[in-house]
Amino acid sequence: MSKIRVRFAPSPTGPLHIGGARSALFNWLFARSLGGEFIVRIEDTDLERSSLEYEELILAALRWLGLDWDEGIGVGGDNGPYRQKERLTIYNPYTQKLLETGQAYHCYCSEEELEAERQALIAKGQLPRYLGKCRNLSGREKEERLLLTDKPVVRFRVPEGRLVVVDDLIRGRVEFESDGIGDYIIVKSDGIPVYNFAVVLDDALMGITHVLRGEEHLSNTPRQLLLYEALNFPLPKFAHISLILGEDRSKMSKRHGSTSVEQYRQEGYLPEALVNFLALLGWSPEGEEEIFSMAELVAKFSLERVAKSPAVFNLEKLKWMNFHYIKEMSLEQLTACCIPYLLKAGLIDEKEAVERREWLRQVIATARDGLHYLAEAPALVKVFFGETVELAPDDEEAKEVLALETSPAVIRRFREEALAMDDWDGEKVRQILKELGKELNVKGKALFMTVRVAVSGQSQGRDLNAILTLLGPAVVAKRLEESLRRFL
Ligand code: GLU
Image 1 (spheres, protein in one colour):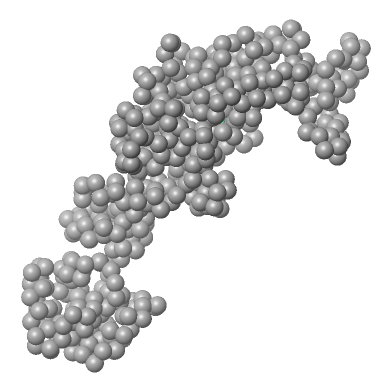
Image 2 (cartoon, helix red, strand yellow):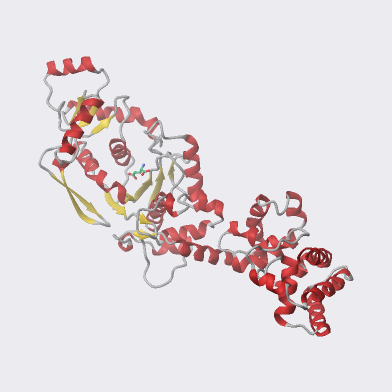
């Protein structure tokens, strides 16, 4: 068998969507697992909606996910250029060839004519399609129609009465009637080929062996197969991956939350977690294991285990995976990754990020067991910043604790102890609290929860000893004083 060559061919009309990222990943895994080549090219024939900014965003997202490519945009190769807009002169001879052999023809129909035809078919309960008005024009008719427009489109002459069969590696045999298709446009009036034509030329000329893409393109495939046949190109194998559904089983959309890779990156999902998660959206390895590194995915991936049924996007599962990968990071790595979020939340400035690094590391260490994605970090560690205390508004338990008869004394005495110290460590803090408990005859909640609420304004949160130790006695004393003044 010749070397496997697969491609990812995004349209740069938006950021990289979760579905697109999953297609790119499956192509990449397929190529890497079989020693094949992965090509990235750009489908930008929709001039109005395509932009270089989106192209850059998509490529950056692919790189961030760790999906490198062997050929294509930014990398080069023997089959360039890799943007469709730059390949127009490559496409032209094929259009001419189809026109010369009569497999394609010029169509002069106006928008209005086509719309009227569409409406008439819909009214009759039929599938809207082009009925072939310009299909068999005589020379004279052509001249007459040319007077109406000198910018005809080119339509492909769909063979009549044919059964077009897609032998899909995932979906099996899928049949389409050619008569339901109608002669479709392959080149627009501005001379630019449409997706269905350009994609066939690109795949064929680039020697793509497997077309692995989302199920939404299955209905395009018969149109593409007919063009392969008309141009005598060898057929690649096709594999259409199922849709991704939201948890309510409707097609994944913005309604379900973040849909682009960029959004997940910004929320602080790690590329390893997203890749692991995306790999399991439609593919499943043998066994129960769900955590896989890139290398393990490459070793295990096979198209045979890609499911026909739709995949459901479960955000809780992604969070769980991300939690796992966050736990695997070294504390220094995690701190470095959290710092941009702390900066953005205004908890620290650039200078503190450098000068208080060791302290920040310890702060982040307290948050690790509650961190599902990095954007959660500021809320989790907010308690470590500033000298003031805000009482959490809906925290009934905090209010109850402050109302205890013993609380004023606990807070006052603990403040005195803090004021007497220049610095303390975890052990010292433990000792002070223990002795205070004895002295005032309070224990458990009445002691520890009271101190917690007076220092942090909340009945729950990070480890109390860590809070007190990392804040240091001076800040603790200030906060206790404020609590005495404001809440008691
Ligand atoms: N440009 C298409 C898209 O972004 C890809 C089509 C294909 O893979 O054939 O959906």
